[in-house]
Amino acid sequence: MATPQLSVVVPCFNEAAVIERFHTAVGEVLGRAGLDYEICYVDDGSTDRTREIIDGLSAGARRVRYTVLSRNFGKEAAMLAGLRMSRGQAVVLMDADLQHPPELIPRMVELHTRGYDQVIPRRTREGEGLARTLLSRSYYALVRHLMDVEVLDGAGDFRLLSRQAVDTVLSLPETNRFSKGIFSWIGFTTATFTYQNAQRVAGGSKWGSRRLLNYGIDGLLSFNNRPLRLAIYAGFWCFLAALVYAAWTAFGVALHGAAVPGYATLLMTVVGLGGIQLITLGIIGEYVGRIYHEVKRRPSFVIRETDEQPAPRPHAPP
Ligand code: UDP
Ligand code: MG
Image (cartoon, rainbow, N blue to C red; front, side):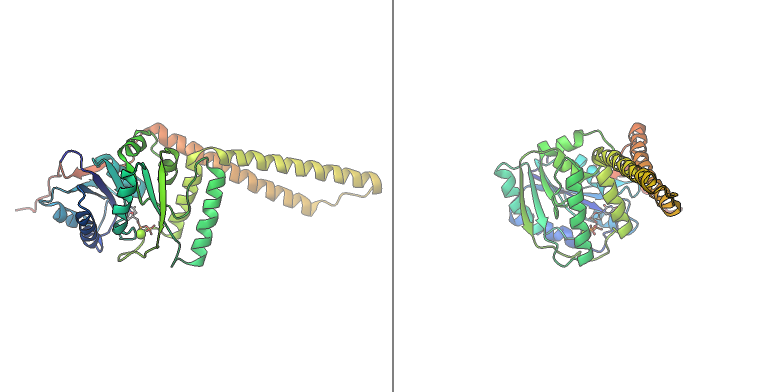
């Protein structure tokens, strides 16, 4: 099987509870659609039975391929590993937890055959907490403002990419990856449609609020240097405010000859400016850190084994 029509790339981290159900669901849908496909599982260093289950699924099934990473590298790296191993003329990226309905795949493929290089199902935010919805909304507003690329609210990593789009993504040399931004940056013709949000069928989400926050900051900073520009503006406005305040004070002294009471203002200025300086320093630091990371040229992930090169199993002592 040289180039199947479709590769389904699935990053899996501790998904033993759902992966079989996922596999059956996808197999049914794709079989019914009569598509020539392969499913590429990437085991992102799971500590549960995920690896064995994938092994079982791939045994004797030519449509199932897998890559096992040497440890947990995160979803971004796992997706990248999956894209690298995929061979299809089009690639669908999806989660293992059935939050991305497999029933949508035929429609995505249909849009692809009509000439779209990217097909993005956007989910509604139904069934999500109000706080999370509000946070996501404002985050996307911020992202739209700070990045040069458009990142759609509700458009996650679930999408179809044409071979050309995949190859473009793979040709980007950066190791710090923020896929949402990259997918948008590469361009190509894009079609979107909405679907009902679904809950994960089993197992737990790997994204605590802390991890989500860090991911958000990563996204904002890893794309361009607009945040640095913000620091310049903040500095400029502070300086302007200080000038105005100085003029006002001088004026007051000249008019009334009053002594300048300064304790509170002094404190506010020092603390306020200190805060801005620390934030700015932090932003610069983040960029320097990223440069450090890129300069090391480490790969985004390390492969332990693939379906083509299974690792030798440790033997039980005789
Ligand atoms: N995932 C992964 N590596 C990680 C975390 C998650 O490969 O370090 C996979 C996970 O197995 C799932 C997908 O990424 O297939 C989405 O994860 P999850 O459902 O936890 O995220 P959520 O849907 O809550 O955003
Ligand atoms: Mg999920």
